[in-house]
Length: 218
Image 1 (tube, rainbow, N blue to C red):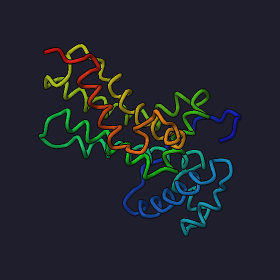
Image 2: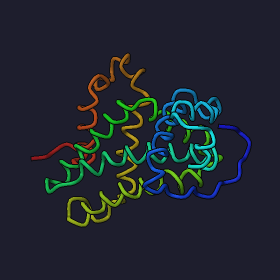
Image 3: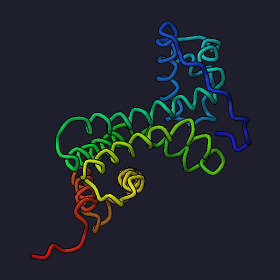
């Protein structure tokens, strides 16, 4: 995105059922193009053409290109968060559900590589300038949802009472993001024996998080 400061736009109105189909097509087109080329290289006309709508229709639904971009980021972040919700649902053991959810989240990042990179690129490149806006309009709601899921386990006695569940959430997300970003290098490193097996990596992260690294004494 441009390096010049832009005013924070007012939120676009939520689409009504009549508008939703057109808005969804625009979002899908914008997600693909922004992920492939980046914000600056994608004109609204290209998004409109890919979505099969007019340029005016794009502005009708989203108001500005920046609002559309933020909507794309929210959509991508929401899809990743939905993975956590789906795997955490149910009545199984909390640690098993959290372990499966973390593994599914990592698979989602790897399978949705382009849009995952779009999200992370925005944080790295524009976080210092747009951090407050990105937190408010893209990430805060989804991170809060993960924290609440982990806190539920804490309330049920599955985690230490004094554990900071936001740090637990950050550890799980951070481990997945590191693997996603570094895997192309890790697979060539002899000591990184986990690099070729993301499921094993994710499983071990969860195991070490819950069981610790101190040796078990009989």
